[in-house]
Image (cartoon, rainbow, N blue to C red):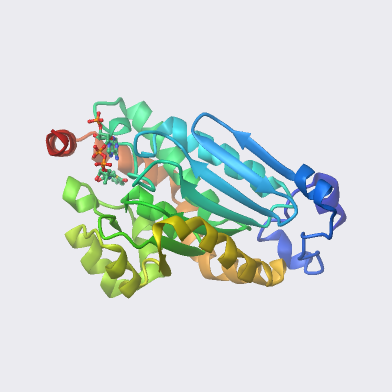
Length: 302
Ligand code: CO8
């Protein structure tokens, strides 16, 4: 406890075992003036974070136009923002949402995997791993406010969260559609989906590269709740209140118990996973598939 106080950081899931007595409640009774002072906002070009210290809840707005595709630069900004929040002991919950119309995130930036050097691909993949490790292993309560389409890496990002609320708009879709691009979701994408919707559903979803409508996603448990589009963020904030009522140490230990084996599988194989990715993605046949997919995206627009 003393260590946590002096460093001003969260204890970390492993450190929690020895710190079961730590305080679980950040919300203090404050005057309105003090409450106003305790709202802070930090912005990189692509990530805006609003943190309300009176509730201990931050909202991360992804604002990387046009479609929040997860480029190396964007992933780096997201990881830095997340790291800062994780280090702040007063931040207990995080809502992740999109500032872009109609899209939560278009997944990994294909341009970071197409026509790039092996060195660049390796750098990029390390950043993808880092994002997943940080979100999936976060001590904070994480809620995805999915206010638009969320294919592939976008779906992965939302699945790393503890709870998913999606806009009930049949034009939106969510899922791991990698096979449709001629690429293969790596084992930790697969594991995250298995942990979310179960083995059989994942097996079909991954092989067929299925993108689900919000109603279908709710049915298979890929998202937890559908609400009207203009209510996604407010519902996320309301839902957060319920999660905040649980003592942090108990919830965090439970989260760790559920997720640690999946996380350990990647952390003990990170380098091999990077090498596999680079070897796979730089193959001529895979590059050709990605090129065709990019063409298809452009044609569809025309
Ligand atoms: N990466 C790069 N650029 C993209 C991406 C992307 N993922 N998605 C869209 N764009 C580009 C489009 O090409 C278009 O560019 P331009 O304006 O230059 O023509 C621009 O963004 C806007 O796109 P749209 O006009 O299509 O926007 P819409 O609002 O109509 O549609 C969608 C938004 C639904 C998100 C649509 O863009 C879409 O379906 N995008 C593709 C999504 C996708 O399939 N992503 C998969 C990425 S791969 C991944 O995340 C996991 C890879 C795991 C690798 C494993 C290897 C071993």
